[in-house]
Amino acid sequence: MKRLFRQFRYGEKGFTLIELLVVVAVLGVLAAVAVPNVGKFIGQGKTESYETELHNVMTATMGMLADSSTGVLDGAVAATNDLSTVLSTDAVAGDINLSMYMAGLNADSTTKSGCTYAFAVDGTVTQASTP
Image (cartoon, rainbow, N blue to C red; front, side, top):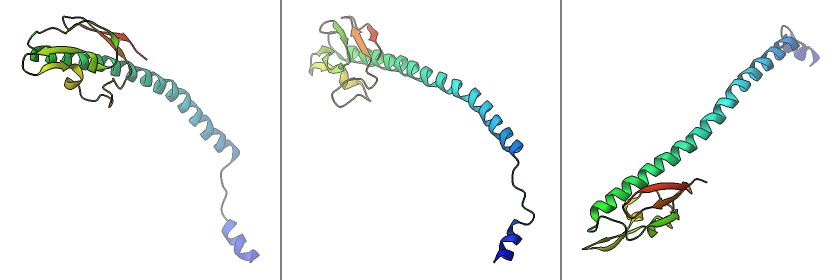
């Protein structure tokens, strides 16, 4: 049995301590370069998603006002993330709300990002706050 184990070890050298230290050093340098860049991209993605959602809310507001008979909102809406509270009047359908024109909302008609929006009577939308 001992003879069998000696045959397996014959000719195998393994890695030296220096080789292992070089590999660890190279991995450390790669991690030091990659980690700050990944953090920067994560923050940038959130900012861009807030801007995209603002654009989508503005587009949906324009569509709602184009479909309404009055062309204005029923009243100014202070900062809210519940888009079902933003109303306009249509001569045929009655009151229409903004959540009917938006896709990708939560089940309770709130925005997924948690941003709040303020609406003027003429349909001007501003992003009141971000989470």
